[in-house]
Length: 324
Image (tube, rainbow, N blue to C red; front, side, top):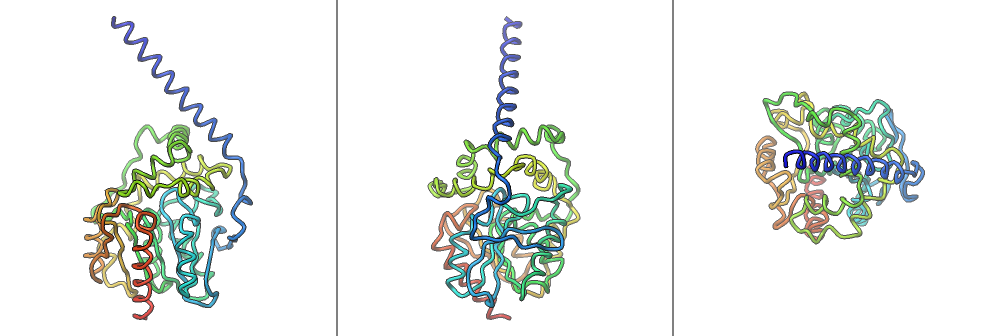
């Protein structure tokens, strides 16, 4: 009996390994497009560090608003908001945060928060005026880091369900042992983040309003994942998510005090990814007012409650402009 059980376990393990290998092979076959497959309505903006793919809307001489997306998203995930802000008279600029989307990827594979912040500042330096940064989820980590490093480069900051991992006593976390070998990280990414069969499931996991995970948004998320080398690039990025540097200013609550620019906070009150207590801790650290909550909304307000989010975003942007 024991021998039979061991054989079954061995067969299951072999089947699992074969399944993961096949998923990795399918990812390599699926990722066949090059950077030129980026939508034609956007453009590449060269900077001192790398070239960013951006999509923009609105008058060229208007107040710029930079839109930073979250994990595994890209500028196309802000499409409605980019058009909304452009129509409202802002210069809306949504950019792809490497390694996601169509921006250049880091030759050295460095996607740490500190390095990403420097890249954002390089992008900001190409603009005619200091932008207001609107940053969502994990994208808010690098964006907020950039603001803290050089607040005078920005006109304001709006953090949307930011994944900041604030911790005054943070130490360097270790990457989980199974993910330390690069080949295993790539296999894990191929089975999850770049697996088209998993996109909708993963998206729904971030939402309180599950119906917001429409086929249209799923298709949008998957579009740049056909780019060649997506799975290896995500594997390079994964340590930045799972083992963030403790040296980042944005992880230290004390660094937020006395910022010389206005900061506003938007949060879903049903967010389970970055729960509301994180929003309250952020508001306390900033000392600039409370949190603007969207009711019955999870981690991605702009797709879960698009109308309410749009109205709130415009109101907060107008507040920031009026305070300057």
